Amino acid sequence: MNTLLSDMRVQSLFLPVLGPSTFSVKALAVIPGNAGKQQALGRAVDWLPLEEEKQMMKFGLMAVAATFLIAAQPAASQQYPNPYKVGDMWTVSGIHVKPGGTLKIAKDLAEVWQKQQDFAKSKGWISGYKILVNSYPRENEPNIYLITMTDRLATPDEVDARGVEMRAFMKMTGEQMQAAAAGRAEFSSSGSTTLLREWVKR
Image 1: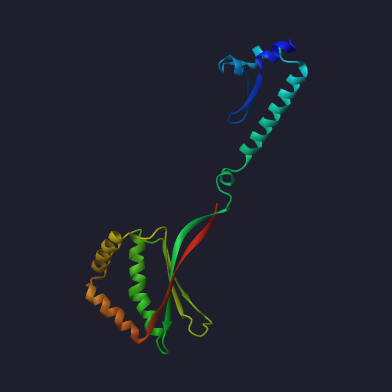
Image 2: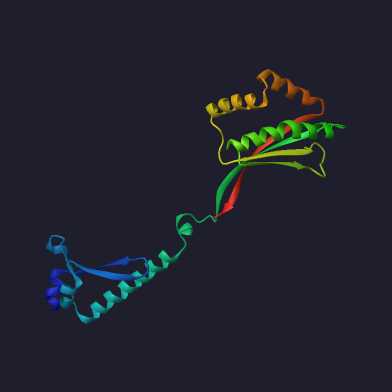
C-alpha cells in the first residue's frame, strides 16, 4: 500500500468552503502523475497510511480555522486599515475687520453672504456653512472665518453655470457684484483661504 502511495505521489489539497453561518471542508487528492486529475478524498484516503491521514486532517482544520478568523474580521479592516474615511471639504476664508467695521461687516454677511449660501445650499452646491468669530485674535490673524462645506469641488463649467444662476437670484450683474465686493474694502479685507478635508469614523 505504501509502495502504491509512493508511485502515485498523492498530495492532499484542502479547500475551505465558508457559507453564511456554517463552514465545511472539501478535501481533494491531487495526483500529479495522472494528467492532473483530481479524485475525492473519500476515494483516495484508502491509499494513505493512517499517520499521514491524521496530518492531512490536522493541517486542513488549521486552514479552516485561519480562514474563519479572517472572515470574522470587520469588512472595513480587511479592505483598509485606516479607521477614518474622508468626508466633506471645508473652505475656510479669513476676514480682517478694520476698526469700526464690525457692524458693517455683520450687516453685509446677513444681507448678502448668508443669502447667497442659503441659495447655494438649496441647490445642493454646498452641504452647509458657518460664520466663526475669532474671540482672541493675535496680530495679523483674521477676525472672522467664513466656512462652506461640500462633498466635492465644482468643475469649471459648473462654476460658470452657478455664477449665472447666482447673479439671477441676487438680481445683480457681474459688474454690480464686483462693485459691491470693492465697497467692502472700506470696512474689511480678505485674508488667506484654506481647504480642509473632514475625517469621518468608518
